[in-house]
Image (cartoon, rainbow, N blue to C red; front, side, top):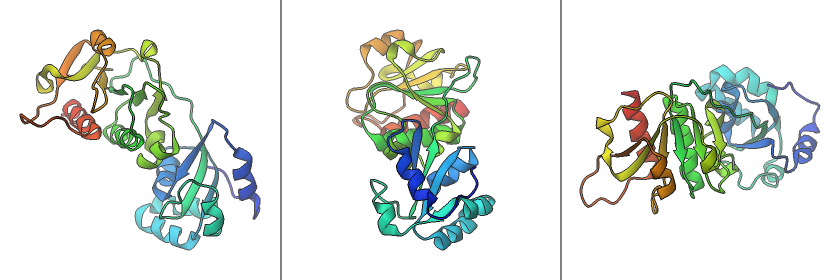
Length: 245
């Protein structure tokens, strides 16, 4: 965590960061809270109503109360709204360094692989699930940036609690692939091997033939007949619960 800076310095620091790809927008109290708990380096943190934020911290994150008191700089709400796409209801915004992402080759926990995801909120929900379950990370393919501010907001800053990265289909992390597909075997009959990649496609299109052809196992989630699909985050939660059980 950084130390406090002179009054007025924070706005200049924010503007100087500009479009630096190494900087992550933490939108809201909970995103900042989790980033701090998982050792993010915070460049600058702003609050539209610092006393209210500290009161919230005393209730929900007393372990961070002292750090937040030092870290947060008060900024009028109208100024803060000019700095962020959509001001969070908690009136908190921060900039943090984006960490280097690496997955250990000898990891035991699975990695969640999302092929060509489209919905930013769904990706954030999956990252939140992966962090909570203790998965090794979340990897996405396709053009969506898993560190997009909307994804970070939906994940409540839990990107810092797990590894999050984009990859090409030809450059996936090592490990056996369990591809989730309606034609697969019931996942309850297939143990999750150490270091597995749990691969999910989009709700509309599913996994590509190219990825399914590389899978070690095609597996399916149990589902009542005539129900077409689960939400992506629900599917990932069911898969991770199966691994944890």
